[in-house]
Length: 208
Image (cartoon, rainbow, N blue to C red; front, side, top):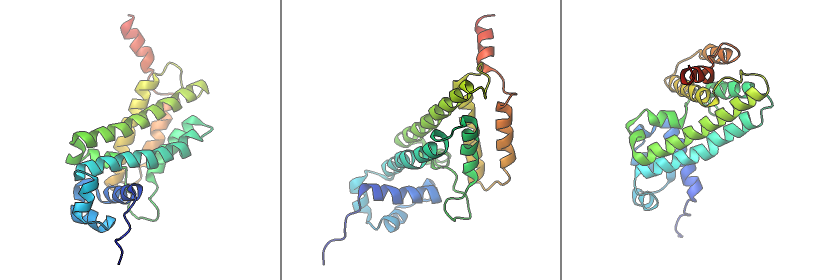
């Protein structure tokens, strides 16, 4: 009998990422990884020095596939930048496949646990946040050019505020909170005319 086919790296990362995302990194054991990957622990740790390294690689994989894919599908292809941002938020309320329970986001889920404080894992999480933040900033700039947002608003500060709001939303989603749509609508209602002009107030402080 021949040796079992060795899993390709992308298949290993896909399976392990799904496990970490579904169960939470803190709840995943080496035995869980063995079962999902069909590999014994020595074979797993010949490829990855530790569970932390595997988790960091999975977060990178998640950023490059799930997050980047959602950005392209929802934001890059949106003719209306503000509606695209709104859709990006509401899409977090959609289940993964046919699962009854919402998974939330692997970045937010992992950051909430001790695993998220491991340097290599934290670096992978921050890379994902930077991608989301830069994408939000680009969409805000587009919305300003289209006349949807006050041009005095500071895109950098506003994108950071949206990222903070998104992380809070994802934490609530993972915890099983319901009826979050009104809060999302209210957030974007503020952007439509009641948001504070951060750039304008910053200019007043710097040039009294």
